Image (cartoon, rainbow, N blue to C red; front, side, top):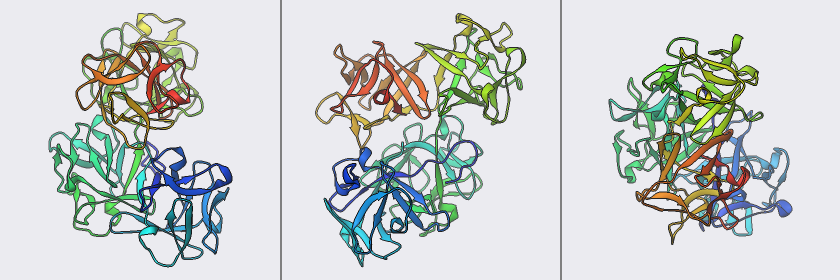
Length: 491
């Protein structure tokens, strides 16, 4: 899936649900597969890969890195380390959005239940149909393939327009809400896109879309069999007249990096308004005071991109400017998390400080007031967390939270002077009890601190100094002593 240049397109990962409402599961022992999973966890997640020479042929890779395949007798295996001939499948989409998977080599269809799976059916029946449940994080940027423009909430028109060159600011965040095999598109202000292009407060059949796949791209089919597409000069997103998806109806989902605003000790916002210099000299927050923070996968250092596409970089005499067009050593910064403030260290080993004229320079050996910044995350007003074992969701019978669910709840993230409050749809706040149990029944908010420690993942520190984690039973706890795999969250 190509990208428009600023972010990477997301790999399509999903669960496949059979006619008995069970997930296709890849077991580690013997690389066997079954359709017995009750929910979508690691073993139920599959990655879709396309053949480089034939866009209709796909491969299904398990969480173990092995490929699903079928022999001439229809026997299913999932042990192939490479994309062999017997691993080649063709997706045959159905009118209700489900898939039939056909072996390209033998022209038979894949299906079955529990341990009785085969790829031997000559025609598509109910047992050969699979519902698709996306496993990627549901918050992303939406890119029109035909227009090469991004979707965003238009404040003036009260609609979603597809006319942005780059996905910038909170208005460019789209949340996919999964329900009953279909998807709703939710805007940053918690409204749903209807098929007529209007934004409404409640979901309904007119806001529910079936997700279809064509050559690695996504199409959204409405309840009347028509497809979403950008219409008119501003690219208003609504259902058109087409009953088959063409290029105008195709979209990419791209990863949505955190975008942040910095306020220095002088109470002014860091900006690129004055040109290439990075200075804390503005009193308002605009796109020029907003920076996209990308965490380098290898070094775990932060890279800050301006809305013009350039990067912060260390130049002569320690000055920080926005002159870099590619990432390299001098564009990477260490973030030190200091409660409600952060300190930034440049590649010269010096901390960034705010000079009297507002200019940012990496010249300090230690951290004082001038080296501390308030950093506010601006493009996650609604929060969805996915951890090592699944999404965070309310427990069915209590006010506690599960951390191992295949469905997710949406929470409000409220900024408060360098900390965050997390609020449930009930209006109650997250709190951590003395025994570390996280509940969503607080009348008063508790402070949490977001630490962006890896590419696409954050650790969340509680006011007790411990980190949120999912325990072995799947309960969300606020008692993690360190940042590890169980205390890092896709957000």
